[in-house]
Length: 345
Ligand SMILES: [Zn+2]
Image (cartoon, rainbow, N blue to C red; front, side, top):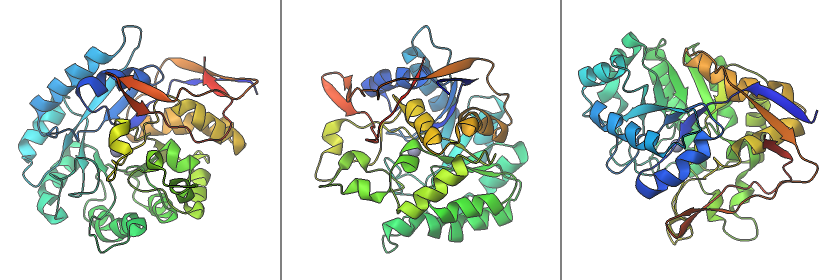
């Protein structure tokens, strides 16, 4: 197979940031994707309908004229979120979902939730109106080993929410462990998970390959090979509970190559090339469309896109552009460092 045509994909988890970075990165997503869910962890975060409407305007302004792209906005849940305001924003279709960050879990998450019980009334309202809850699924207790934080979150927080509110539509985002795969598979019908290209491509050795590799540092952190294998197996299986959320997360190189470097991998530019190669390597190309174009829409009760895209196999491996320029500074573009022969035509 040297060419495949599939429904145009969606990316169900992106970080566009703001200002000059936003202007540089939005076209990298809008070129290949029809829709994306945009994360609200700006400084300050997107907390209410007005913030979301303003942010959406800034994003749409950065979309090149030729691209047909719709951003779906999210609100950042805090222990002070007003459930009536949240409901109104959702019913007005200004926002698509709400995002739960445990306080301190990742970039700009200090306003997040410390005690899940305090937001249960909000989650009940979301269940009533059908509003999706997106979750960064890691505990933030520093006494828990960083490689175990997702598993402990599932056992102590996610399971609690799923038992209390079995009908709440939940996406456990950017899953990284075999425990998460198992929990989602066996979990409520309304529970699904997104997976990133970098967690499919790399295991934790990529953090320390001949020296420390800040550009492979992300949260949740890369895990052991057995976990990557579990992610690969389920992502390429066609299972409808699993779909792409790239978690493309730009930071300036100066903020990554730093004595306290930021977490995040900017993978938008070659996302589809990397994923197509991974599916081909697994001999699972026929399931690619489900993972990137169908399963997510179904989970969110949306129609799949009408447009199609073509992926073409090249005779030589692609040469990746290394950096994306932002006002005389740069963002490093994710490169998994194995040969990639697929490009979007
Ligand atoms: Zn993210």
